[in-house]
Length: 288
Image (tube, rainbow, N blue to C red; front, side):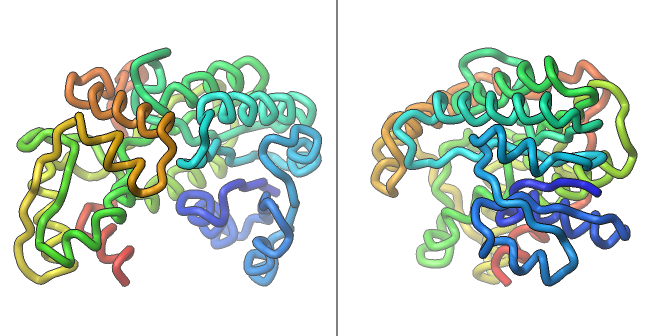
């Protein structure tokens, strides 16, 4: 049996689906029982646990041969790094207590850096903590999620424009959550292999103009155009949509480091793994 967290989100749901399709038994970890009912109907066991509750997570991990874990952060949090650190520390205690044989953890591009990466700092800490306690651990350092562009669908549909804090003309690594979940499931099925880092991107890197083209084709049936936004607008724009000021400041730092190239793959353990789902396919799935 495998334990899977995050099944109400994008990546965990794919992991659980792929494992069930492979004929494996799955235990989904959810915050309340109601969120697990759909998975129970598909044949999964349900464990109720908050990810910052070490004892509850340890119980959910008992007897499994592998687990998919992640550390979600609320954009409304007034202490995002502190909350993430507490959550990761609790998961690390649970991993140690349960002696789960293999952990696959959703990390991020640039997680090898201890600073100047905005919210990515939280998974740098996670990699350190889990490496110290897990018997075998695989970190999936995923690129920028293609699904993050869902927040601008309304602007593209309404005005045919793509507002973007990314530099025009520069290609950035991006990946669909479908690929993340698939690769995570493959790693769980492959079994323990020591400490491993998989740096994961989509089939190609994308400029903001390419993203605008894909969004325009999917949402409008015609071309959309990029409207570059200055970094000075990151905090006011994000807070206007309900993001907390501390989290908005972290995103400002992230965009700055994307511009300078500080946020990039380490490429220490080999070539970047390329996924199968391109931008147009990812956007079409979101728009369906």
